[in-house]
Image (cartoon, rainbow, N blue to C red; front, side, top):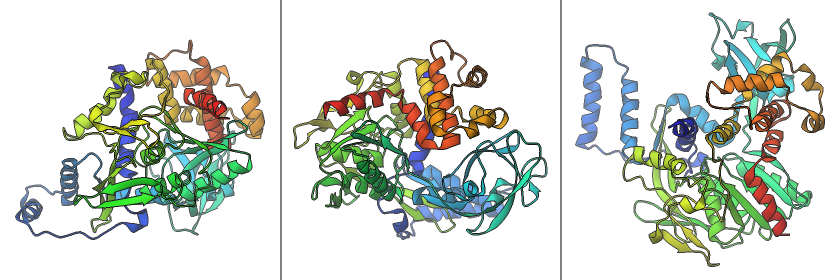
Length: 527
């Protein structure tokens, strides 16, 4: 059962991401707030029950919370991806889909009652003010952010252009410095990395699909073309999806005008087709798409569109299997519902949505069973439904009914220990230990250049042991023997992100990635 327990935190994170970052039928700005009000007896019954509880129940009851529970219960009986977004969640969800928010621009965690800066967001207010990873933020406008009388961290939010004074303790210092910061718009980047893997192959890592994704992606493609890229790898591993229009625009970069990207069907079987335009910058060049079991929704739109049009090569493991389209509808109090309003189909006509007719629990368990039946380590264990067999124009056999099966399979980690370490790499498990090290003993690292750090820095034994002790709280069977080099890489990658940004972290982790190794082999074969 240990493997199963290991996967629950990752699975739950992916599920909630899928519940929030879903492929909208419309863009995030085009949400349809209209709906038909039906004065049915059942509707009146629900309203009457809430009124009776509100007026007659023996104890005081927050009827708003009852309504929230009722809405969630209703949606759970529809499909796994129709979700309720509470008023508290709505702002963060909207920010994620827009690709920006107003704030001070830091990633942080609270440890021992204190805000520790994990990293600053590039070109954000805090970076401009000189705040760095490893700093501790103790005060805001003279009010404590720690201790019994602390103010809420929500106070860090505010209107764009508003000013605040942060009391910051720098690593190695004993006195607090006051740092003026002006709140402003902060970008949440979809493209985490864009660099050359070899002299011909450019690599782009995309973590989700938001309003800003297409512009970011287009800039990355142009950047790599200027560096000589005639091949492109788009890494959609662990990408849970997002706005459907952003996925369509990405697929358009690689497909020729008039090629079908996908089509949608609603409850009345009305069909809406999306075709490629002449705007693509990489239509005549080689492309690779990297996916894994956590690539979902909009990621699968891109992979399916290219695979069904015989464009490029899909590498990795079978994707999640979400072929439903959601549309956001406001409920009048700041909350909203993302309701499934259509199914999408790849160009050959296949739906890649996994069955959910046996209920949500069975649906979730089917995802976990992939780990247990061995399909992540052996492609022959992937179960397919021959009745959902399709053929692309080029004669390639593809299947519907449960995700995108890659053209080139790359096995995942086989042992429990290796699965654990991959989970650590994916979730940034080393971040706290690395940040604590920066606060107390990593002052000299701040003076190293990126090149010096990449080529020369070795993780000290004391830091390695600190992480190992921390990690054993999660997995008591984890050993250093045989894993020392990879654990050191995880720590170095976390330090790299906090000191130099996410791209260097991804470069370091990619240096030990089996999917990247296979990608490089295929790239050379395609020269």
